[in-house]
Image 1 (cartoon, rainbow, N blue to C red):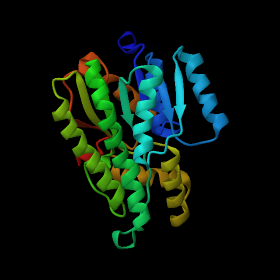
Image 2 (cartoon, one colour):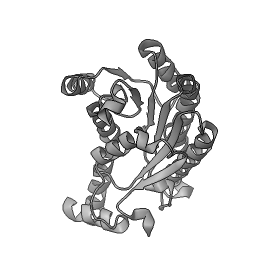
Image 3 (spheres, rainbow, N blue to C red):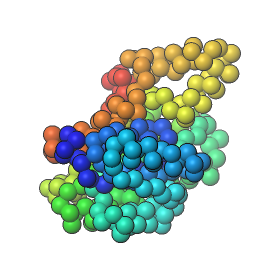
Image 4 (cartoon, helix red, strand yellow):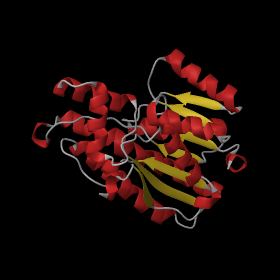
Length: 263
């Protein structure tokens, strides 16, 4: 697949840490030029960018575009097109989380989660799709969640947004069918990211147990494999969806969840 993807240009939103960074690293290993996006310490982001270039002989860029703002999302796509000449792969990964019972859910948290987890993907796709159609080739991969397929308590905004991502994927997959562009969603189960580390710590503190016990409690409650999905596994799933083997996979949601949604 490396020769297939070499020279392609990918934008990966929310890619300065966690799942997005894992996807960016995997695509770079397949020869893809990467535009990183997200927040963080500038020196650390620059180190990530330089590491990708040295390790994989690819070009990299970085944008701190705020995914909660429509004009910033659309501007990111347009800027990459202007500076690099094309956008081949768009990975909509940026996301945030907040948990509370629905009657206590803060309105500002609802609005923020919907803006970043769902609306940002809409704005990115709407801007990138015409460019991809002119090229006659493109890949849109939306990072949803197991929560795009099933629900959990206290996650009204997150579950709503991720179900919306799966629906958006189906609609755009239909609209782009036959154009050389595929649109798919990946639905990960538990992935050991900084976001999940915070949840593990919270469980440990709340229940007065060790973080190891909290980890097993987290996994056994949802994920029958009792193993975390890794960012690298998700990156390889993205790379597969960009390969010729996946040319007729479009408009679908792929669960990578240790049998979570098989229950």
